[in-house]
Length: 256
Image (cartoon, rainbow, N blue to C red; front, side, top):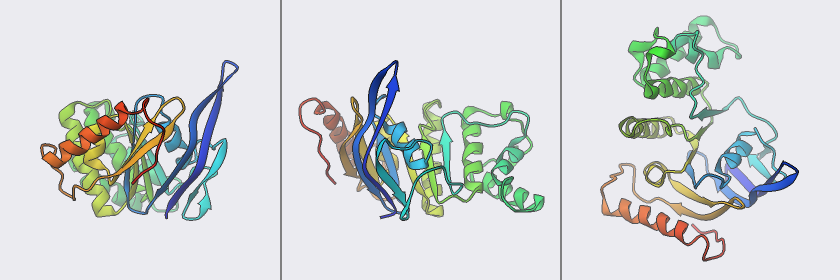
């Protein structure tokens, strides 16, 4: 296993009362997998993502990546949020170069890498543009290019397409799948959209709230080319709907 999440719980205190965001979560992830954490608001999926990324420490349990316990963020693990996080005073290529300014490389090397990944996301003609001149989808492409420029081992994505229109969202889903396959990256992707999870993931981790737990883990056997209109796609999507509907009727279970 590459990532091992063992019996992880996370509790917060709010207004003097303890709140359990994650309750005894167990999950293993292999190198190169695309994992979607799926569930409604309050199910702990972003908390789990932040714990794996090292932004939050578990209250109990442990998380290891490649055998080492996660205690803090790692520069080889990058996070892409719904908020693009671009610096408005920098143009596109200089926003992407930002990922390399803390590592040893020349200005020419930074520019070369930034241009390489901007071309990969289809923005080679917008390198000198300012962020405010770009659409939301284009800004998210810049954020993806910036993440790739750091040449990470793991990419964490927290509802990165949530604010985009449906057409742009579908295009970016295709783009991130192409990048994941060609670059062989491990991606952990948070979403509340069932169709998005089925389309993207090798496995979907269905989470339920109050407290945040894993309800079911489903392997998506649809092959590399996925058709949203196929009968198999519809069956898996419907199965996940049924799992959510069973949440309050049956005990929590773990299955593959």
